[in-house]
Amino acid sequence: MSTQEPAAIADELLDAIAALRRQLRRAAGRPWPDDNLTYAQSELLRLVRRRPGLAVAEAADELGLAANTVSTLVGQLTGMGLLRRTKDDADRRVARLSLTEPAHKRVTSWRDRRAGLVAAALRQLPAEDLAVLARAGGAIGRLGDQLRDAEVIDGPGN
Image 1 (tube, one colour):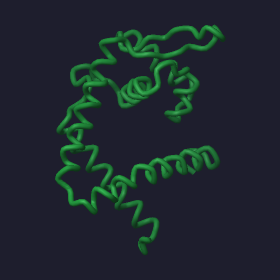
Image 2 (cartoon, helix red, strand yellow):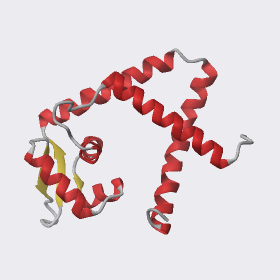
Image 3 (tube, helix red, strand yellow):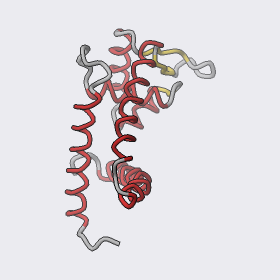
Image 4 (cartoon, helix red, strand yellow):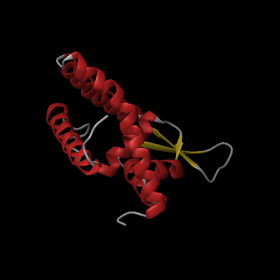
């Protein structure tokens, strides 16, 4: 059990995550380096790759964005030929999202490149670090859940 204060742990964790993301961005690049996708557009594409058939409202909830914001992103990405929007068979008012085949290949290739880089780096770490990181994924996921729950209760910026 750590004796550090939560604020110190938060600072250390945020710094480590930021450094990891920077290094991955440098090493793996971006899935669409020439298309200037926004962060929100990229996040939506990654989410749809993980959960094809997702409804716009579900995507908005998962990303913590307003449904009309996600609808705008969907329109932009559909226009770019990256995303496909289809009507739900059970409820024609609901749009289901999927990646186009070229977008799916590109996002999957980028994800595989990133995962390969991280796996190679993990192989270089001492066994005790690897054990800590193996357990950390679940804890980081639960931390994200706590942040999402706090945002729902307190609202952003409070």
